[in-house]
Length: 330
Image 1 (cartoon, rainbow, N blue to C red):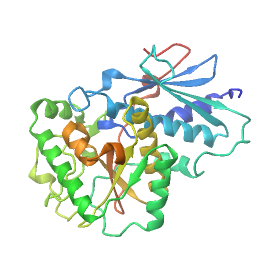
Image 2: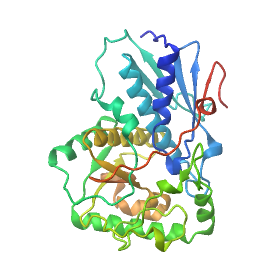
Image 3: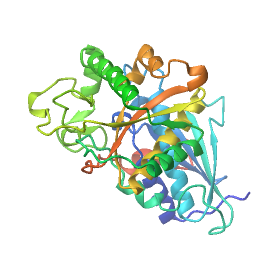
Image 4: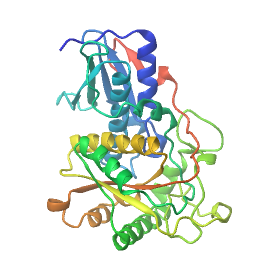
């Protein structure tokens, strides 16, 4: 298949969509370049933006980059091309995580996902605020599960008892994170009083559940009384568990693509979402989320879903900081 020519406006929009993806601690650990010979996007890791203590294996970094790859696919499709993706295409260059190549004749392809995801790229924000008690319909759950399945992952909605267990495991992880000095220091580095090009402004942190039913991450690693919610969080939270069959680097990238596919479909359906990643950061706790990985898969992330207020947008790095053309970003 021949590569597609990209005009400057389309190129700009594709990069903007890619960097609108969610990332661990809003670290935005990616770089992009356009290969002038193949007219393909090289998607690279930015290891200097990794989290040594919270993410020593760079699994969450791969999920973040995978989410940006999915947004890039959505944008390429929106502008009429067919995206061809290769994950980890160069064993001798481990920092090159993906290549996305627009191909085909413009406006003559079949989209690989629902056509209304592109506008959702700009509306999707994590919401760490209390949700209402309105239940998710069976149809909504099925659409979200299908979005994950399309990317080679699975999305399960546990029953109430299992949901309570998953939240207890998350609470244990949050407690460990809060009292781990190295992780606390690392986390606080990404929290800012004002608006910066990355990290989390304090206005984006959201409240903490005063009753501790839902262990939202305290990025400051300090439980401030003024951040306890005066309003109850939902009493019957909807938690979805995203899993992959295997646990290799390619699976982490696919999990990121699946996560963003799920989040964009949720946005289209009018749902809010927040991510509970804490138990994934402790080997024993992550393993306990899928007691038998050989049959149930490897846990990649927990997603809290519901109806409620829209979360604030977090800042994104400037284009010149994440994109270059013609020369590798190494």
